[in-house]
Amino acid sequence: DVKVTQSSRYLVKRTGEKVFLECVQDMDHENMFWYRQDPGLGLRLIYFSYDVKMKEKGDIPEGYSVSREKKERFSLILESASTNQTSMYLCASSHTGNTIYFGEGSWLTVV
Amino acid sequence: AQSVTQLDSQVPVFEEAPVELRCNYSSSVSVYLFWYVQYPNQGLQLLLKYLSGSTLVKGINGFEAEFNKSQTSFHLRKPSVHISDTAEYFCAALRGSNYKLTFGKGTLLTVNP
Image (cartoon, chains in turn brown, purple):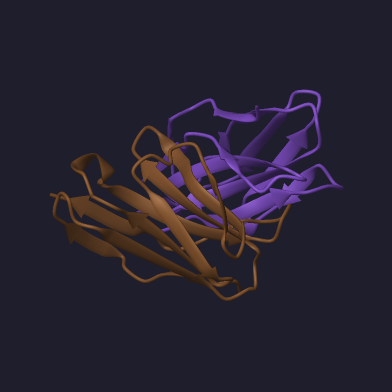
């Protein structure tokens, strides 16, 4: 089975802190994604990566950056956390044109 | 641009009743379609997918969906629901040559005893 692992399930951070959300997949997928999920808004794509060191902005990239130094790992970075970034963050991975598999999610609260 | 519309934000049903969750997509090109389920405080789990072939797709937990190209629909059905089916369900579309899923806003299915 495909496994997408998000290292932190629940985090509480202070406004202005730098936050790292880590994601690892074990299926040699070339594509990895970070989504944000909010009530009533569904899932919105923040960034995705189709290869090591390659990235593209999704629908809501403002306030976020990403890093993909190794194929299996994709990190989401909040340079200076703000309260409006309190949300659930979902990492996912896939082969191109095929099923996308999701991690369990990371609940981030910014106070 | 690709879009996915889930017509109902909430669907309450009684246990053992049939249910249909509706999904329409907009695309004139070949598209792959998916249904995901999200249980409380969990990530998204793939329920079923349509890539090609038979238009009736069977998934896990007794769910099935029918791809209807003329109506651009991919409705999810289950003949008899259980309390444990209470969850949020997301329809999603992927263009074959693209990387990115487009999601609907989700349908909260609540199964009451």
